Image (cartoon, rainbow over all chains, first blue to last red; front, side, top):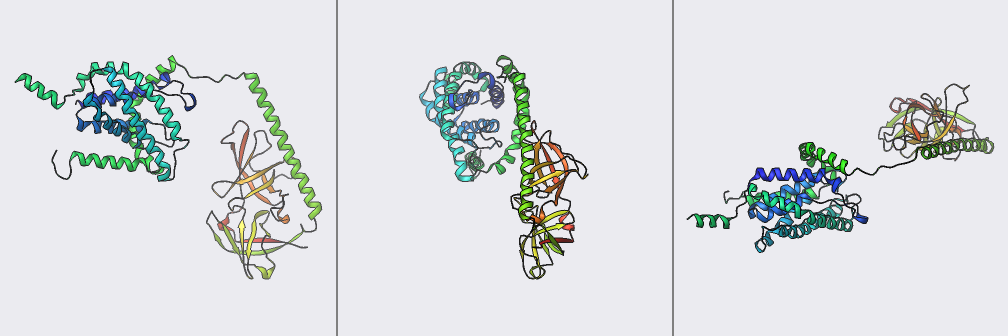
Amino acid sequence: MNWIAFGIAAYMCLALEMGLRTLLLFPGGGVGQVSPSFMLVLATFVALRAPAAMVTWVMLVLGLLVDLTSTTIADGPVLGPAALGYVLGGWAVLQLRAMVFRESVLTLAVTTCIAGVFVHLGTVFLLSMRGPVTGEPVASFSAADQLVHRFLQLLYTVVLSLPAGLILLRLAPAFGFRSRLSSRMVETVRG
Amino acid sequence: MPRGWLNRRHILVVVIGMLLVSSLLPVSVARPIAMVPYTAVTAVLSPISRVLKTFSDTLRPGYSLEIEAGTFNSLRADRDQALKTIQELELQIVDLRERLARLTESSVSESRQIEARVIWYSSDLSNPVLRINKGLKEGVTPSLAVVWGVQLIGVVQDANRLSAEVSPITAPGTEMWVRVVPPNPNSRRRLAGQLRLSDDGRSFYLDVARDAPLEIGDLAHLADAQGIWPPEASGFVVGKVQKISDHPERPLSLKRAIVQPLYDLPRLSWVSVLEPVN
Protein backbone atom coordinates (compact mmCIF):
# COMPACT_ATOMS: atom_id res chain seq x y z
CA MET A 1 0.00 0.00 0.00
CA ASN A 2 1.17 3.48 -0.83
CA TRP A 3 1.23 5.28 2.52
CA ILE A 4 1.76 8.71 0.95
CA ALA A 5 -1.41 8.37 -1.12
CA PHE A 6 -3.21 7.12 1.95
CA GLY A 7 -1.92 10.09 4.01
CA ILE A 8 -3.09 12.58 1.40
CA ALA A 9 -6.49 10.88 1.19
CA ALA A 10 -6.84 10.86 5.00
CA TYR A 11 -5.86 14.53 5.15
CA MET A 12 -8.38 15.45 2.48
CA CYS A 13 -11.16 13.42 4.07
CA LEU A 14 -10.52 14.94 7.50
CA ALA A 15 -10.39 18.45 6.06
CA LEU A 16 -13.61 17.83 4.12
CA GLU A 17 -15.27 16.40 7.21
CA MET A 18 -14.34 19.42 9.29
CA GLY A 19 -14.70 22.09 6.63
CA LEU A 20 -17.95 20.97 5.03
CA ARG A 21 -19.72 20.08 8.26
CA THR A 22 -21.81 23.26 8.18
CA LEU A 23 -22.75 22.77 4.56
CA LEU A 24 -23.73 19.11 4.89
CA LEU A 25 -25.64 19.35 8.18
CA PHE A 26 -28.95 17.57 8.04
CA PRO A 27 -31.73 17.91 10.64
CA GLY A 28 -31.63 14.92 12.96
CA GLY A 29 -34.81 15.57 14.94
CA GLY A 30 -34.45 15.38 18.69
CA VAL A 31 -30.82 14.23 18.62
CA GLY A 32 -29.37 17.29 16.88
CA GLN A 33 -28.06 17.79 13.39
CA VAL A 34 -26.06 15.08 11.67
CA SER A 35 -23.22 15.29 9.18
CA PRO A 36 -21.62 12.47 7.20
CA SER A 37 -18.24 10.91 7.94
CA PHE A 38 -15.74 10.98 5.08
CA MET A 39 -13.27 9.16 7.30
CA LEU A 40 -15.53 6.15 7.66
CA VAL A 41 -15.89 5.85 3.89
CA LEU A 42 -12.12 6.02 3.44
CA ALA A 43 -11.59 3.52 6.27
CA THR A 44 -13.99 1.05 4.70
CA PHE A 45 -12.47 1.55 1.27
CA VAL A 46 -8.98 0.83 2.59
CA ALA A 47 -10.15 -2.06 4.77
CA LEU A 48 -11.71 -3.71 1.71
CA ARG A 49 -8.50 -3.60 -0.30
CA ALA A 50 -5.41 -3.24 1.88
CA PRO A 51 -3.42 -6.26 3.06
CA ALA A 52 -5.03 -7.74 6.17
CA ALA A 53 -1.96 -7.06 8.31
CA MET A 54 -2.14 -3.37 7.53
CA VAL A 55 -5.88 -2.89 8.00
CA THR A 56 -5.72 -2.72 11.79
CA TRP A 57 -2.93 -0.11 11.68
CA VAL A 58 -4.80 1.95 9.10
CA MET A 59 -7.92 1.79 11.25
CA LEU A 60 -5.94 2.84 14.31
CA VAL A 61 -4.54 5.87 12.51
CA LEU A 62 -7.89 6.95 11.11
CA GLY A 63 -9.61 6.34 14.45
CA LEU A 64 -7.02 8.40 16.28
CA LEU A 65 -7.55 11.27 13.84
CA VAL A 66 -11.29 11.04 14.48
CA ASP A 67 -10.64 11.03 18.24
CA LEU A 68 -8.53 14.17 17.91
CA THR A 69 -11.19 16.05 15.96
CA SER A 70 -14.20 14.71 17.84
CA THR A 71 -16.25 17.05 20.01
CA THR A 72 -18.22 14.41 21.91
CA ILE A 73 -16.19 15.05 25.06
CA ALA A 74 -16.50 18.79 25.60
CA ASP A 75 -13.57 19.03 28.05
CA GLY A 76 -11.02 18.01 25.44
CA PRO A 77 -9.92 15.22 23.14
CA VAL A 78 -9.42 11.75 24.60
CA LEU A 79 -7.46 9.21 22.59
CA GLY A 80 -8.98 5.79 22.27
CA PRO A 81 -12.73 5.46 21.90
CA ALA A 82 -12.97 6.10 18.15
CA ALA A 83 -9.58 4.45 17.45
CA LEU A 84 -10.72 1.20 19.03
CA GLY A 85 -14.14 1.55 17.40
CA TYR A 86 -12.43 1.80 14.01
CA VAL A 87 -10.29 -1.26 14.80
CA LEU A 88 -13.51 -3.14 15.52
CA GLY A 89 -15.01 -1.87 12.25
CA GLY A 90 -11.86 -2.93 10.36
CA TRP A 91 -12.11 -6.39 11.86
CA ALA A 92 -15.73 -6.65 10.68
CA VAL A 93 -14.74 -5.67 7.13
CA LEU A 94 -11.91 -8.21 7.15
CA GLN A 95 -14.43 -10.97 7.93
CA LEU A 96 -16.65 -9.86 5.07
CA ARG A 97 -14.35 -8.84 2.30
CA ALA A 98 -13.61 -12.32 0.97
CA MET A 99 -17.30 -12.70 0.16
CA VAL A 100 -17.93 -9.42 -1.69
CA PHE A 101 -17.16 -7.92 -5.06
CA ARG A 102 -14.82 -5.09 -4.16
CA GLU A 103 -15.01 -3.14 -7.42
CA SER A 104 -18.60 -2.04 -6.89
CA VAL A 105 -19.70 1.23 -5.31
CA LEU A 106 -22.72 -0.56 -3.85
CA THR A 107 -20.39 -2.96 -2.07
CA LEU A 108 -18.58 -0.01 -0.54
CA ALA A 109 -21.88 1.49 0.60
CA VAL A 110 -23.13 -1.71 2.21
CA THR A 111 -19.78 -2.45 3.82
CA THR A 112 -19.59 1.11 5.13
CA CYS A 113 -22.95 0.56 6.80
CA ILE A 114 -21.81 -2.68 8.44
CA ALA A 115 -18.42 -1.30 9.47
CA GLY A 116 -20.10 1.85 10.79
CA VAL A 117 -22.34 -0.17 13.07
CA PHE A 118 -19.28 -1.78 14.67
CA VAL A 119 -17.35 1.50 14.82
CA HIS A 120 -20.16 3.38 16.52
CA LEU A 121 -21.10 0.55 18.87
CA GLY A 122 -17.49 0.26 19.99
CA THR A 123 -17.06 4.01 20.40
CA VAL A 124 -20.31 4.51 22.32
CA PHE A 125 -19.53 1.52 24.54
CA LEU A 126 -16.15 2.98 25.52
CA LEU A 127 -17.59 6.45 26.07
CA SER A 128 -20.32 4.94 28.24
CA MET A 129 -17.74 3.08 30.29
CA ARG A 130 -15.97 6.32 31.20
CA GLY A 131 -18.58 7.09 33.85
CA PRO A 132 -18.39 3.80 35.82
CA VAL A 133 -14.59 3.44 35.41
CA THR A 134 -13.32 6.99 35.98
CA GLY A 135 -16.22 8.39 37.95
CA GLU A 136 -16.33 11.21 35.41
CA PRO A 137 -19.19 10.53 32.98
CA VAL A 138 -19.06 12.50 29.74
CA ALA A 139 -21.10 15.66 30.23
CA SER A 140 -24.56 15.59 28.60
CA PHE A 141 -23.86 12.10 27.29
CA SER A 142 -26.68 9.66 26.75
CA ALA A 143 -25.78 6.35 25.14
CA ALA A 144 -29.25 6.01 23.63
CA ASP A 145 -29.15 9.50 22.11
CA GLN A 146 -25.64 8.86 20.85
CA LEU A 147 -26.67 5.62 19.17
CA VAL A 148 -29.65 7.25 17.46
CA HIS A 149 -27.52 10.22 16.40
CA ARG A 150 -24.75 8.00 15.11
CA PHE A 151 -27.21 5.73 13.30
CA LEU A 152 -28.61 8.74 11.42
CA GLN A 153 -25.06 9.87 10.76
CA LEU A 154 -24.27 6.42 9.42
CA LEU A 155 -27.25 6.46 7.05
CA TYR A 156 -26.08 9.83 5.76
CA THR A 157 -22.54 8.46 5.37
CA VAL A 158 -23.85 5.50 3.39
CA VAL A 159 -25.57 7.90 0.99
CA LEU A 160 -22.36 9.92 0.73
CA SER A 161 -20.31 6.78 0.13
CA LEU A 162 -21.95 6.35 -3.30
CA PRO A 163 -20.41 9.46 -4.93
CA ALA A 164 -17.31 9.28 -2.73
CA GLY A 165 -16.90 5.63 -3.66
CA LEU A 166 -16.90 6.47 -7.36
CA ILE A 167 -14.03 8.90 -6.80
CA LEU A 168 -12.12 6.48 -4.57
CA LEU A 169 -12.49 3.64 -7.07
CA ARG A 170 -10.99 5.87 -9.74
CA LEU A 171 -8.13 6.71 -7.41
CA ALA A 172 -7.61 3.10 -6.28
CA PRO A 173 -4.49 2.53 -8.43
CA ALA A 174 -2.76 5.41 -6.64
CA PHE A 175 -3.10 3.58 -3.33
CA GLY A 176 -1.05 0.69 -4.69
CA PHE A 177 -3.23 -2.05 -3.20
CA ARG A 178 -2.05 -5.51 -4.19
CA SER A 179 -3.17 -8.67 -2.51
CA ARG A 180 -1.06 -11.86 -2.42
CA LEU A 181 -3.54 -13.60 -4.68
CA SER A 182 -3.27 -10.92 -7.36
CA SER A 183 0.58 -11.00 -7.18
CA ARG A 184 0.54 -14.71 -7.75
CA MET A 185 -1.87 -14.26 -10.62
CA VAL A 186 0.43 -11.65 -12.16
CA GLU A 187 3.41 -13.96 -11.78
CA THR A 188 1.41 -16.80 -13.35
CA VAL A 189 0.39 -14.62 -16.28
CA ARG A 190 3.96 -13.36 -16.68
CA GLY A 191 5.37 -16.86 -16.36
CA MET B 1 9.81 -8.43 10.92
CA PRO B 2 11.57 -10.92 13.24
CA ARG B 3 9.49 -13.56 14.96
CA GLY B 4 10.98 -12.76 18.38
CA TRP B 5 9.20 -11.34 21.38
CA LEU B 6 8.83 -7.98 19.68
CA ASN B 7 6.95 -8.42 16.43
CA ARG B 8 4.29 -6.36 14.70
CA ARG B 9 1.44 -8.25 16.35
CA HIS B 10 2.84 -7.69 19.84
CA ILE B 11 3.26 -3.98 19.17
CA LEU B 12 -0.31 -3.82 17.91
CA VAL B 13 -1.63 -5.52 21.04
CA VAL B 14 0.35 -3.12 23.23
CA VAL B 15 -0.93 -0.08 21.28
CA ILE B 16 -4.52 -1.30 21.53
CA GLY B 17 -4.07 -1.90 25.24
CA MET B 18 -2.68 1.59 25.70
CA LEU B 19 -5.58 3.09 23.78
CA LEU B 20 -8.03 1.12 25.90
CA VAL B 21 -6.45 2.54 29.04
CA SER B 22 -6.27 6.02 27.50
CA SER B 23 -9.94 5.96 26.56
CA LEU B 24 -10.88 5.25 30.17
CA LEU B 25 -8.58 7.81 31.80
CA PRO B 26 -10.06 10.84 33.56
CA VAL B 27 -10.16 13.94 31.35
CA SER B 28 -7.62 15.69 33.59
CA VAL B 29 -5.06 13.00 32.69
CA ALA B 30 -6.16 12.13 29.14
CA ARG B 31 -6.40 15.72 27.94
CA PRO B 32 -2.72 16.63 28.40
CA ILE B 33 -1.73 13.42 26.59
CA ALA B 34 -3.96 14.24 23.62
CA MET B 35 -3.20 17.97 23.47
CA VAL B 36 0.11 17.68 21.60
CA PRO B 37 -1.23 15.58 18.69
CA TYR B 38 -4.46 17.57 18.78
CA THR B 39 -2.58 20.85 18.35
CA ALA B 40 -0.49 19.37 15.55
CA VAL B 41 -3.48 17.93 13.67
CA THR B 42 -5.47 21.13 14.06
CA ALA B 43 -2.55 23.21 12.82
CA VAL B 44 -2.01 20.98 9.80
CA LEU B 45 -5.69 20.88 8.94
CA SER B 46 -6.57 24.49 9.56
CA PRO B 47 -5.42 25.99 6.20
CA ILE B 48 -7.65 23.82 4.07
CA SER B 49 -10.49 23.30 6.53
CA ARG B 50 -10.75 27.06 7.02
CA VAL B 51 -11.15 27.58 3.29
CA LEU B 52 -13.77 24.85 3.16
CA LYS B 53 -15.55 26.29 6.18
CA THR B 54 -15.70 29.72 4.54
CA PHE B 55 -17.04 28.08 1.42
CA SER B 56 -19.66 26.22 3.48
CA ASP B 57 -20.70 29.35 5.35
CA THR B 58 -21.05 31.23 2.05
CA LEU B 59 -23.32 28.59 0.57
CA ARG B 60 -25.24 27.93 3.75
CA PRO B 61 -25.02 30.80 6.22
CA GLY B 62 -25.98 30.10 9.83
CA TYR B 63 -29.15 31.36 11.45
CA SER B 64 -29.07 34.91 12.70
CA LEU B 65 -30.98 36.01 15.75
CA GLU B 66 -33.04 38.98 14.67
CA ILE B 67 -34.43 41.09 17.45
CA GLU B 68 -36.05 44.42 16.88
CA ALA B 69 -33.83 47.08 18.41
CA GLY B 70 -36.76 48.99 19.89
CA THR B 71 -38.12 45.96 21.72
CA PHE B 72 -34.66 45.09 23.00
CA ASN B 73 -34.04 48.59 24.32
CA SER B 74 -37.45 48.68 25.94
CA LEU B 75 -36.83 45.35 27.67
CA ARG B 76 -33.44 46.52 28.83
CA ALA B 77 -34.91 49.73 30.26
CA ASP B 78 -37.59 47.72 32.09
CA ARG B 79 -34.97 45.38 33.49
CA ASP B 80 -32.79 48.27 34.67
CA GLN B 81 -35.77 49.92 36.32
CA ALA B 82 -36.70 46.66 38.06
CA LEU B 83 -33.13 46.20 39.31
CA LYS B 84 -33.11 49.75 40.65
CA THR B 85 -36.40 49.20 42.44
CA ILE B 86 -35.11 45.97 43.96
CA GLN B 87 -31.98 47.76 45.14
CA GLU B 88 -34.02 50.53 46.78
CA LEU B 89 -36.34 48.04 48.43
CA GLU B 90 -33.36 46.06 49.77
CA LEU B 91 -31.99 49.27 51.23
CA GLN B 92 -35.32 50.02 52.89
CA ILE B 93 -35.53 46.48 54.26
CA VAL B 94 -32.09 46.77 55.80
CA ASP B 95 -32.98 50.16 57.29
CA LEU B 96 -36.19 48.87 58.77
CA ARG B 97 -34.57 45.74 60.16
CA GLU B 98 -31.80 47.79 61.73
CA ARG B 99 -34.33 50.11 63.27
CA LEU B 100 -36.29 47.13 64.58
CA ALA B 101 -33.13 45.57 65.95
CA ARG B 102 -32.18 48.80 67.68
CA LEU B 103 -35.64 49.10 69.23
CA THR B 104 -35.80 45.52 70.45
CA GLU B 105 -32.20 44.92 71.39
CA SER B 106 -30.99 48.31 72.44
CA SER B 107 -30.38 47.02 75.95
CA VAL B 108 -27.83 44.44 74.83
CA SER B 109 -26.07 46.37 72.07
CA GLU B 110 -23.98 48.25 74.56
CA SER B 111 -20.72 46.46 75.12
CA ARG B 112 -17.35 46.67 76.75
CA GLN B 113 -14.15 45.76 74.98
CA ILE B 114 -11.81 43.07 76.31
CA GLU B 115 -8.39 43.52 74.76
CA ALA B 116 -6.58 40.31 73.90
CA ARG B 117 -3.30 39.34 72.28
CA VAL B 118 -3.26 37.05 69.25
CA ILE B 119 -1.09 34.11 70.25
CA TRP B 120 -1.51 31.86 67.19
CA TYR B 121 -3.27 31.74 63.88
CA SER B 122 -3.96 29.03 61.35
CA SER B 123 -3.29 29.96 57.74
CA ASP B 124 -5.40 27.06 56.46
CA LEU B 125 -7.94 28.76 54.17
CA SER B 126 -10.43 25.95 54.69
CA ASN B 127 -10.54 26.63 58.42
CA PRO B 128 -8.82 29.89 59.40
CA VAL B 129 -8.65 30.32 63.16
CA LEU B 130 -7.12 32.91 65.52
CA ARG B 131 -6.24 32.04 69.10
CA ILE B 132 -6.27 34.80 71.67
CA ASN B 133 -4.90 34.89 75.21
CA LYS B 134 -8.18 35.67 76.95
CA GLY B 135 -10.73 33.04 77.86
CA LEU B 136 -13.64 32.25 80.14
CA LYS B 137 -11.74 33.66 83.10
CA GLU B 138 -11.91 37.16 81.55
CA GLY B 139 -15.47 36.74 80.32
CA VAL B 140 -14.69 35.68 76.74
CA THR B 141 -17.40 33.22 75.76
CA PRO B 142 -18.35 31.67 72.41
CA SER B 143 -20.35 33.74 69.89
CA LEU B 144 -18.98 37.11 71.04
CA ALA B 145 -17.88 39.53 68.34
CA VAL B 146 -14.18 40.26 67.88
CA VAL B 147 -12.96 43.53 66.38
CA TRP B 148 -9.74 45.37 65.63
CA GLY B 149 -10.35 49.10 65.80
CA VAL B 150 -13.32 49.67 63.49
CA GLN B 151 -12.71 46.44 61.61
CA LEU B 152 -14.81 43.38 62.40
CA ILE B 153 -12.52 40.37 62.76
CA GLY B 154 -14.91 37.53 63.52
CA VAL B 155 -16.69 35.64 66.23
CA VAL B 156 -15.41 33.64 69.19
CA GLN B 157 -15.84 30.04 68.19
CA ASP B 158 -14.61 28.21 71.24
CA ALA B 159 -13.20 29.23 74.60
CA ASN B 160 -11.46 27.61 77.53
CA ARG B 161 -10.37 29.14 80.81
CA LEU B 162 -7.27 30.92 79.53
CA SER B 163 -7.67 31.27 75.76
CA ALA B 164 -10.25 31.33 73.00
CA GLU B 165 -10.45 30.57 69.31
CA VAL B 166 -11.85 33.11 66.91
CA SER B 167 -13.39 32.24 63.55
CA PRO B 168 -12.59 35.18 61.22
CA ILE B 169 -15.11 36.68 58.81
CA THR B 170 -13.14 35.09 55.97
CA ALA B 171 -14.10 31.58 57.13
CA PRO B 172 -15.65 29.51 54.31
CA GLY B 173 -19.35 30.01 53.69
CA THR B 174 -19.48 33.50 55.17
CA GLU B 175 -22.33 35.62 53.88
CA MET B 176 -23.32 38.91 55.40
CA TRP B 177 -25.54 41.86 54.68
CA VAL B 178 -23.69 45.12 54.56
CA ARG B 179 -24.27 48.77 53.99
CA VAL B 180 -21.67 50.29 51.69
CA VAL B 181 -20.97 53.95 52.38
CA PRO B 182 -18.21 56.37 51.39
CA PRO B 183 -15.53 57.13 54.00
CA ASN B 184 -16.76 60.74 54.06
CA PRO B 185 -19.45 60.85 56.78
CA ASN B 186 -21.24 63.80 55.11
CA SER B 187 -21.94 61.87 51.94
CA ARG B 188 -25.48 60.60 51.58
CA ARG B 189 -24.55 57.93 49.10
CA ARG B 190 -25.17 54.41 50.44
CA LEU B 191 -25.94 50.98 49.17
CA ALA B 192 -27.15 47.73 50.70
CA GLY B 193 -26.10 44.32 49.53
CA GLN B 194 -25.00 40.85 50.46
CA LEU B 195 -21.29 40.03 50.62
CA ARG B 196 -20.11 36.58 49.66
CA LEU B 197 -16.67 35.12 50.21
CA SER B 198 -14.48 35.00 47.09
CA ASP B 199 -12.78 31.83 45.94
CA ASP B 200 -9.41 33.13 47.20
CA GLY B 201 -10.75 33.02 50.78
CA ARG B 202 -9.29 36.45 51.56
CA SER B 203 -11.81 38.88 50.11
CA PHE B 204 -15.51 39.23 49.43
CA TYR B 205 -17.54 40.11 46.38
CA LEU B 206 -20.71 42.10 46.07
CA ASP B 207 -22.92 41.98 42.98
CA VAL B 208 -24.91 45.14 42.36
CA ALA B 209 -26.77 46.81 39.51
CA ARG B 210 -24.60 48.59 36.97
CA ASP B 211 -25.88 52.01 37.96
CA ALA B 212 -25.62 51.37 41.73
CA PRO B 213 -23.83 54.17 43.63
CA LEU B 214 -20.57 52.45 44.41
CA GLU B 215 -16.98 53.64 44.20
CA ILE B 216 -13.54 52.27 44.96
CA GLY B 217 -12.63 53.13 48.54
CA ASP B 218 -16.16 52.82 49.92
CA LEU B 219 -16.45 50.99 53.23
CA ALA B 220 -18.75 48.04 53.82
CA HIS B 221 -20.32 48.09 57.29
CA LEU B 222 -22.06 45.09 58.77
CA ALA B 223 -25.82 45.60 58.67
CA ASP B 224 -26.99 42.26 59.96
CA ALA B 225 -30.64 42.27 60.89
CA GLN B 226 -31.18 38.54 60.71
CA GLY B 227 -29.42 37.86 63.99
CA ILE B 228 -26.64 35.83 62.39
CA TRP B 229 -23.95 38.04 63.89
CA PRO B 230 -23.80 39.36 67.46
CA PRO B 231 -25.73 42.66 67.77
CA GLU B 232 -22.56 44.41 69.01
CA ALA B 233 -20.90 43.73 65.67
CA SER B 234 -23.43 45.79 63.73
CA GLY B 235 -21.90 48.85 62.13
CA PHE B 236 -18.31 47.63 62.24
CA VAL B 237 -16.36 47.71 58.98
CA VAL B 238 -16.16 44.44 57.08
CA GLY B 239 -13.90 45.70 54.33
CA LYS B 240 -13.06 48.30 51.72
CA VAL B 241 -14.07 48.28 48.04
CA GLN B 242 -10.81 47.58 46.20
CA LYS B 243 -11.98 46.85 42.68
CA ILE B 244 -15.11 47.22 40.58
CA SER B 245 -15.49 45.19 37.40
CA ASP B 246 -18.12 43.75 35.11
CA HIS B 247 -20.08 40.80 36.44
CA PRO B 248 -18.49 37.70 34.83
CA GLU B 249 -21.84 36.20 33.76
CA ARG B 250 -24.19 39.17 33.47
CA PRO B 251 -21.99 42.08 32.44
CA LEU B 252 -24.86 44.03 30.86
CA SER B 253 -26.91 44.31 34.02
CA LEU B 254 -24.56 43.83 36.95
CA LYS B 255 -21.15 44.82 38.22
CA ARG B 256 -19.02 43.12 40.83
CA ALA B 257 -17.18 44.86 43.64
CA ILE B 258 -14.31 43.19 45.44
CA VAL B 259 -14.30 44.05 49.14
CA GLN B 260 -11.05 43.49 51.01
CA PRO B 261 -10.89 43.38 54.83
CA LEU B 262 -8.63 46.06 56.33
CA TYR B 263 -6.69 43.60 58.45
CA ASP B 264 -3.88 41.26 57.52
CA LEU B 265 -4.54 38.09 59.47
CA PRO B 266 -0.89 36.96 59.89
CA ARG B 267 0.14 40.40 61.20
CA LEU B 268 -2.71 40.84 63.62
CA SER B 269 -1.18 41.11 67.10
CA TRP B 270 -4.11 42.21 69.23
CA VAL B 271 -7.89 42.33 69.01
CA SER B 272 -10.85 43.35 71.16
CA VAL B 273 -13.67 41.09 72.19
CA LEU B 274 -17.03 42.84 72.51
CA GLU B 275 -18.79 41.69 75.63
CA PRO B 276 -22.41 42.82 76.07
CA VAL B 277 -22.81 44.90 79.19
CA ASN B 278 -26.29 43.62 79.98
